[in-house]
Image (cartoon, rainbow, N blue to C red; front, side):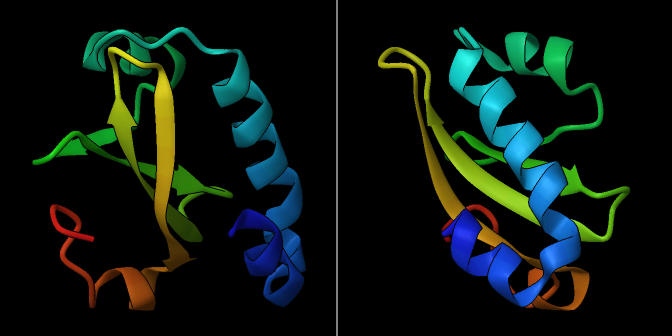
Length: 90
């Protein structure tokens, strides 16, 4: 999903790669652990976390299964696209 996005928006590639690398190495057991790495992350229902990508040009929404340390990418897009989704159910 990230690769497909940066094919369309190549300026997002470096920021998304950095997010992916850091997330792969993370050991997030709770929202406070995420906040330690990404203090601007926002949290919504259903364990969804919203990240600003490339100085808030893009948004990334993930669902985190903390006990199993799995991060599911639910959405990546522009702010206009983000405004049209329900982050708690996507």
